[in-house]
Length: 382
Image (tube, rainbow, N blue to C red):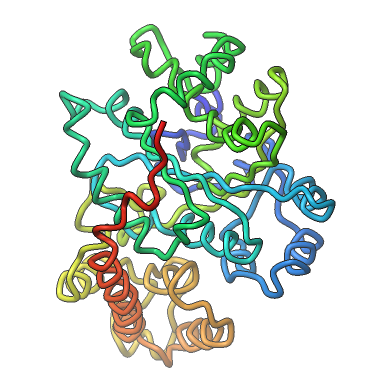
């Protein structure tokens, strides 16, 4: 939402750089002009994938632009490629991996390439944390290791670091930038005269991966961008501009936000370390954070909970299981029913989540150790 849109909905804020408040996703669909993912589209996807990812079944990926066109082209023998990214401002946490896990599923099911953009330039331009671009080098490397450790196929995955691939990006960004006016940038992002000129130019850089495969192939290749809904303004601009220079509009499929343990502030945030689970957290840290900070939908006492039951719609342990950690529909239904009836206590729900999170992180951390010397297998060069 732009500044003007947020003034109409002061209870929540959604921009590429800030997410806060209780998000009304129906209003976001209306304001952003995306399409809800309906049963007909789910059936079309399932025809090609054989089953549906639980994030589709449960409406975690809830809206899209031009997914039907993407499937039309795929069925005509013109397959798409995937594009997603990461701004390496700090440690990777669980909230970041939602989009990436789903992207990996799409890559495997459709057998298509993935271009992963590491936007270290964006984090330098938009943050006061870094005095030099090189200040981001170590965190960039660690973030890439976390991405690789999720299991992306090195033969089908290219990772580009914006500052390392500046020649490729800048040459492709120039025709895009020439078609974007300052008034468009101001209206799309709420920029003022105090924004630095790098911030103003940046959206042209973020549009480039949506056409890179077309540039490399010498023909138009459809692009599908899985991303969290807060990044939509960048791609609205890209969709408006790219046809003017001869390319397809990128399609997108967008997910809701993964909440922090407190259930506040719209999504998990690195700035609140106590309510975020990082990919390098230990089992002890996970247990402590979940038990201490995870907002409960249960009653004040065990007796009241047994009698009245809990509310899974606000219980963060259940929400994390529903969105990410328990893909089995029968199991998640049983957890919800038992919690509502009072048969399952809040502490028991948390204990089950802790077990799931630590199992996930154990596998991830073991993979990360194994791939630490494999970064070059993924990186592209100018």
